[in-house]
Image (tube, rainbow, N blue to C red; front, side):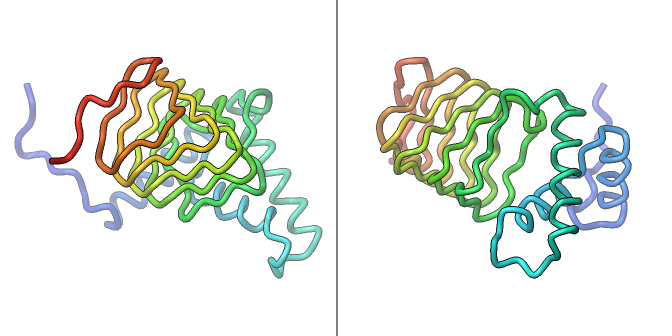
Length: 173
């Protein structure tokens, strides 16, 4: 039975913030902290001391090892994220090439590979588990890429792509 009186708290309410902090404590992965520290470690212009950068790198590697993703996860320093992506299953098995540009509010599930070589991913894209994005691909704003889908061509805005040999099943009219 669904409780119709239950409402999710607004994303910035104190209940939601405390909920995320408790979840981070239980899971050992604080999304905001991880990505903030990653941006400081990879940015050569960051004003942090070398000791602080090493401490942040240690935190990142410890978090990766705790979640079993220190082998098989490679988010290259040259990858440009306009905002930290949402990783519902953590950074497990995600490989991102060094010259990839990823937009804001992108959702990346586990085992996703984004090859280097002129790949751009628009804002609000959802990359399903195990999907592979090959070089010279552009994924439009709001597109949805199905699980285990191999993308070797450009996907238009708000389209849905499925199957290992890509087939676009919906396009905006």
